[in-house]
Image (cartoon, rainbow, N blue to C red; front, top):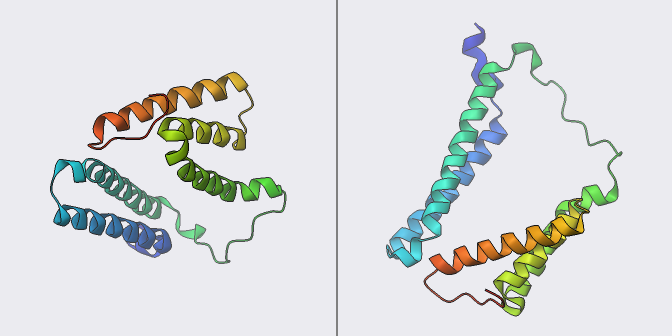
Length: 165
């Protein structure tokens, strides 16, 4: 009897969101392929789309697995309660801060180059997320920004504005 009722225990909101994301990725990929099948057009879109679709499939499988493994008597009867007020204002605002940092990063790319803007963004993101070791912030930001910039310069068919690399 328990094996047949697992459909009632599905997290339908999560499942529908994953299906919507996968549909959006598939439609974007189909549109990109229809526009041009040249390697230069699909060099980033195709691998990212495949990765995104695979991640959606893994998460959808997890939703089904959770529904099958959840005991029958743990179905939530009352709505989720709001978060406890023990979080600080900074903790609650961290996603907005990260979004603002990303906007600044996009703004800085044409001015400070891909390498400089990436290093600054990574350093600021590490600080916002609690990293306090200055040597680690500098080393990680510079090394990762250099590696990512070098990688993108090597695979993109058009020049990438940089300052150091």
